[in-house]
Length: 214
Image (cartoon, rainbow, N blue to C red):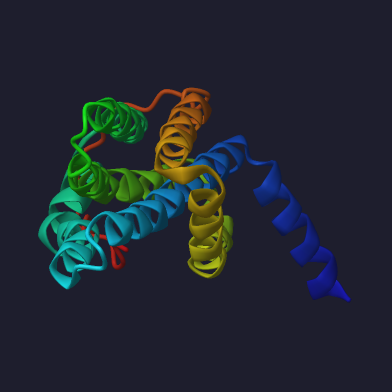
Protein backbone atom coordinates (compact mmCIF):
# COMPACT_ATOMS: atom_id res chain seq x y z
CA UNK A 1 0.00 0.00 0.00
CA UNK A 2 2.81 2.40 0.90
CA UNK A 3 4.79 1.75 -2.27
CA UNK A 4 1.79 2.28 -4.53
CA UNK A 5 0.81 5.50 -2.85
CA UNK A 6 4.29 6.96 -3.15
CA UNK A 7 4.91 5.72 -6.70
CA UNK A 8 1.89 7.44 -8.21
CA UNK A 9 2.73 10.97 -7.01
CA UNK A 10 6.27 10.52 -8.32
CA UNK A 11 5.05 9.71 -11.82
CA UNK A 12 2.49 12.49 -11.82
CA UNK A 13 5.07 15.02 -10.66
CA UNK A 14 7.36 13.88 -13.47
CA UNK A 15 4.66 14.48 -16.07
CA UNK A 16 3.90 17.87 -14.51
CA UNK A 17 7.53 18.92 -14.87
CA UNK A 18 7.52 21.67 -17.51
CA UNK A 19 10.92 20.74 -18.94
CA UNK A 20 9.87 17.10 -19.31
CA UNK A 21 6.69 18.16 -21.09
CA UNK A 22 8.60 20.41 -23.50
CA UNK A 23 11.32 17.87 -24.27
CA UNK A 24 8.80 15.09 -24.89
CA UNK A 25 6.71 17.37 -27.12
CA UNK A 26 9.81 18.36 -29.07
CA UNK A 27 10.88 14.71 -29.36
CA UNK A 28 7.41 13.79 -30.63
CA UNK A 29 7.58 16.34 -33.48
CA UNK A 30 11.18 15.36 -34.17
CA UNK A 31 10.38 11.66 -34.46
CA UNK A 32 7.47 12.38 -36.79
CA UNK A 33 9.81 14.37 -39.03
CA UNK A 34 12.60 11.80 -38.91
CA UNK A 35 10.45 8.79 -39.77
CA UNK A 36 8.45 10.53 -42.49
CA UNK A 37 11.77 11.70 -43.95
CA UNK A 38 13.42 8.27 -43.74
CA UNK A 39 10.70 6.28 -45.45
CA UNK A 40 9.49 8.94 -47.86
CA UNK A 41 13.03 9.40 -49.17
CA UNK A 42 13.64 5.64 -49.25
CA UNK A 43 10.51 4.98 -51.30
CA UNK A 44 11.16 8.00 -53.50
CA UNK A 45 14.72 6.91 -54.35
CA UNK A 46 13.44 3.40 -55.02
CA UNK A 47 10.99 4.83 -57.56
CA UNK A 48 13.44 7.27 -59.16
CA UNK A 49 16.23 4.73 -59.63
CA UNK A 50 14.04 1.75 -60.58
CA UNK A 51 15.09 -0.08 -57.39
CA UNK A 52 18.80 0.47 -57.91
CA UNK A 53 20.57 -1.37 -55.02
CA UNK A 54 23.45 1.11 -54.81
CA UNK A 55 21.22 4.19 -54.55
CA UNK A 56 19.04 2.50 -51.92
CA UNK A 57 22.09 1.49 -49.89
CA UNK A 58 23.37 5.08 -49.99
CA UNK A 59 20.23 6.18 -48.16
CA UNK A 60 21.14 3.82 -45.30
CA UNK A 61 24.70 5.15 -45.33
CA UNK A 62 23.45 8.74 -45.10
CA UNK A 63 21.15 7.80 -42.19
CA UNK A 64 23.46 5.65 -40.09
CA UNK A 65 27.06 6.67 -40.87
CA UNK A 66 26.76 9.88 -38.77
CA UNK A 67 25.81 7.76 -35.74
CA UNK A 68 29.25 6.14 -35.81
CA UNK A 69 31.18 9.23 -36.90
CA UNK A 70 29.57 11.97 -34.78
CA UNK A 71 27.99 10.30 -31.73
CA UNK A 72 30.96 10.77 -29.40
CA UNK A 73 31.66 14.24 -30.78
CA UNK A 74 28.03 15.22 -30.28
CA UNK A 75 28.02 13.90 -26.72
CA UNK A 76 31.17 15.85 -25.87
CA UNK A 77 29.90 19.14 -27.25
CA UNK A 78 26.47 18.64 -25.68
CA UNK A 79 28.26 18.59 -22.34
CA UNK A 80 30.05 21.88 -23.09
CA UNK A 81 27.45 23.92 -24.98
CA UNK A 82 24.14 25.32 -23.78
CA UNK A 83 21.73 22.38 -24.33
CA UNK A 84 18.81 24.61 -25.23
CA UNK A 85 20.78 26.51 -27.87
CA UNK A 86 22.19 23.26 -29.21
CA UNK A 87 18.78 21.66 -29.64
CA UNK A 88 17.17 24.78 -31.12
CA UNK A 89 20.08 25.35 -33.49
CA UNK A 90 20.20 21.74 -34.71
CA UNK A 91 16.45 21.47 -35.30
CA UNK A 92 16.37 24.86 -37.02
CA UNK A 93 19.22 23.91 -39.34
CA UNK A 94 17.50 20.60 -40.10
CA UNK A 95 14.30 22.42 -41.03
CA UNK A 96 16.15 24.92 -43.24
CA UNK A 97 18.10 22.15 -44.99
CA UNK A 98 14.87 20.27 -45.70
CA UNK A 99 13.24 23.29 -47.34
CA UNK A 100 16.40 23.97 -49.34
CA UNK A 101 16.20 20.41 -50.62
CA UNK A 102 12.53 20.96 -51.51
CA UNK A 103 13.59 24.06 -53.46
CA UNK A 104 16.31 22.12 -55.24
CA UNK A 105 13.86 19.38 -56.18
CA UNK A 106 11.68 21.99 -57.86
CA UNK A 107 14.54 22.48 -60.33
CA UNK A 108 14.90 18.77 -61.00
CA UNK A 109 17.69 17.97 -58.55
CA UNK A 110 16.06 15.02 -56.81
CA UNK A 111 19.46 13.69 -55.70
CA UNK A 112 19.49 16.40 -53.03
CA UNK A 113 17.36 14.11 -50.86
CA UNK A 114 20.60 12.35 -49.96
CA UNK A 115 21.97 15.64 -48.62
CA UNK A 116 18.85 16.26 -46.53
CA UNK A 117 19.16 12.85 -44.92
CA UNK A 118 22.87 13.26 -44.21
CA UNK A 119 22.64 16.78 -42.74
CA UNK A 120 19.66 15.95 -40.53
CA UNK A 121 21.26 12.75 -39.28
CA UNK A 122 24.49 14.58 -38.37
CA UNK A 123 22.61 17.27 -36.46
CA UNK A 124 20.65 14.64 -34.55
CA UNK A 125 23.91 13.43 -33.00
CA UNK A 126 24.25 16.83 -31.31
CA UNK A 127 20.58 17.41 -30.51
CA UNK A 128 19.76 14.12 -28.77
CA UNK A 129 22.60 14.24 -26.20
CA UNK A 130 21.62 17.84 -25.45
CA UNK A 131 18.10 16.65 -24.64
CA UNK A 132 19.51 14.12 -22.19
CA UNK A 133 21.61 16.87 -20.63
CA UNK A 134 18.47 18.95 -20.07
CA UNK A 135 16.93 16.04 -18.21
CA UNK A 136 19.94 15.95 -15.90
CA UNK A 137 19.74 19.69 -15.29
CA UNK A 138 16.02 20.04 -14.60
CA UNK A 139 14.62 16.67 -13.49
CA UNK A 140 15.05 15.73 -9.79
CA UNK A 141 17.50 12.91 -9.26
CA UNK A 142 14.82 10.65 -7.82
CA UNK A 143 12.79 10.93 -11.03
CA UNK A 144 15.73 10.80 -13.42
CA UNK A 145 15.47 7.11 -14.25
CA UNK A 146 11.72 7.32 -14.87
CA UNK A 147 12.19 10.41 -17.05
CA UNK A 148 14.89 8.83 -19.18
CA UNK A 149 12.78 5.67 -19.53
CA UNK A 150 9.87 7.76 -20.76
CA UNK A 151 12.16 9.54 -23.22
CA UNK A 152 13.51 6.26 -24.58
CA UNK A 153 10.02 4.73 -24.75
CA UNK A 154 8.98 7.47 -27.16
CA UNK A 155 11.87 6.56 -29.45
CA UNK A 156 11.02 2.85 -29.21
CA UNK A 157 7.37 3.52 -30.01
CA UNK A 158 8.31 5.28 -33.24
CA UNK A 159 10.56 2.39 -34.26
CA UNK A 160 7.30 0.43 -34.51
CA UNK A 161 4.91 3.13 -35.77
CA UNK A 162 7.37 5.28 -37.74
CA UNK A 163 7.77 3.07 -40.84
CA UNK A 164 4.00 2.81 -41.26
CA UNK A 165 3.61 6.57 -40.80
CA UNK A 166 6.32 7.44 -43.33
CA UNK A 167 5.01 4.96 -45.89
CA UNK A 168 1.44 6.21 -45.52
CA UNK A 169 2.37 9.88 -45.95
CA UNK A 170 4.46 9.19 -49.06
CA UNK A 171 1.87 6.95 -50.72
CA UNK A 172 -0.95 9.39 -50.05
CA UNK A 173 0.74 12.72 -50.75
CA UNK A 174 4.03 12.14 -52.59
CA UNK A 175 7.56 13.31 -51.90
CA UNK A 176 7.06 17.09 -51.93
CA UNK A 177 4.29 17.07 -49.35
CA UNK A 178 6.27 14.53 -47.31
CA UNK A 179 9.35 16.77 -47.29
CA UNK A 180 7.16 19.74 -46.38
CA UNK A 181 5.72 17.80 -43.42
CA UNK A 182 9.26 16.98 -42.31
CA UNK A 183 10.24 20.66 -42.35
CA UNK A 184 7.09 21.70 -40.49
CA UNK A 185 7.69 19.01 -37.86
CA UNK A 186 11.22 20.32 -37.29
CA UNK A 187 9.96 23.89 -36.99
CA UNK A 188 7.31 22.77 -34.46
CA UNK A 189 10.08 21.10 -32.49
CA UNK A 190 11.99 24.41 -32.49
CA UNK A 191 8.87 26.27 -31.34
CA UNK A 192 8.47 23.83 -28.45
CA UNK A 193 12.11 24.17 -27.42
CA UNK A 194 11.85 27.96 -27.32
CA UNK A 195 9.67 27.51 -24.22
CA UNK A 196 12.54 25.92 -22.31
CA UNK A 197 14.14 27.91 -19.49
CA UNK A 198 17.48 29.47 -20.30
CA UNK A 199 20.50 27.36 -19.47
CA UNK A 200 24.07 28.52 -19.42
CA UNK A 201 27.14 26.74 -20.68
CA UNK A 202 28.04 24.27 -18.00
CA UNK A 203 31.46 22.95 -17.20
CA UNK A 204 32.09 19.51 -18.67
CA UNK A 205 31.77 16.65 -16.24
CA UNK A 206 33.98 13.61 -16.05
CA UNK A 207 31.05 11.45 -17.12
CA UNK A 208 30.43 13.43 -20.29
CA UNK A 209 30.02 10.61 -22.81
CA UNK A 210 26.43 9.32 -22.93
CA UNK A 211 25.97 5.57 -22.81
CA UNK A 212 23.60 5.49 -25.79
CA UNK A 213 23.70 7.70 -28.83
CA UNK A 214 21.03 6.25 -31.05
